[in-house]
Every structure is written in C-alpha cells, then in structure tokens.
Length: 96
Image (tube, rainbow, N blue to C red):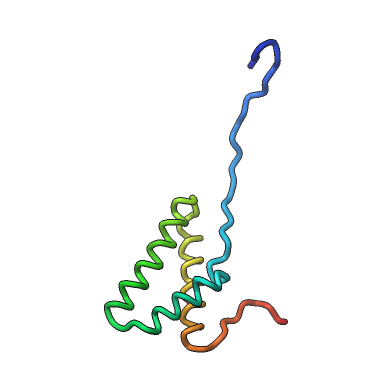
C-alpha cells in the first residue's frame, strides 16, 4: 500500500485476551455487598444479589470476556462475599 509516496505496511489486527481485575479482590465491593446482604432477607436479599451479579456480568460481557472467565470471576466474588458474611477468610493461595 502506498500513501503520498510512502510505503505503508498493511495492518492486521492481532488476537488479544482481556485480563480482568480479579473479582475476589474487589474488597470494597465485597465488603459493601456483604453488609447489605446481611441487613436483607428473603426476596429483598435475592433481588439485591441478582442485581449485583447481573451488573458485574454485564460489565464483563461488554469488556469482551469469555463466558468461562465470567463464571469463574463471579464464583470467586460470591465465595468472597459469603466468606465475609460468615466471618471467615477464604483461602487465597498466599501462605503469608
């Protein structure tokens, strides 16, 4: 390809992978979600949980994450929220 006397190489897009910030490390969102869920029960808690998970899923889909990655991230987030609610600390692989 030539442009104004210069040779311009053809551009070919390369494949890329979007690496999300780990959802199980979003401490502020985990803390707040656990607090709100702790104050709600029944349908109110269910609606709130579906809203949180639905919003996170939507953001990840828009970012182009694969469904297997989305499910893994959402499960990690859920594990962290419920561990916080139970007062335990989930194992995060860090020996320190």
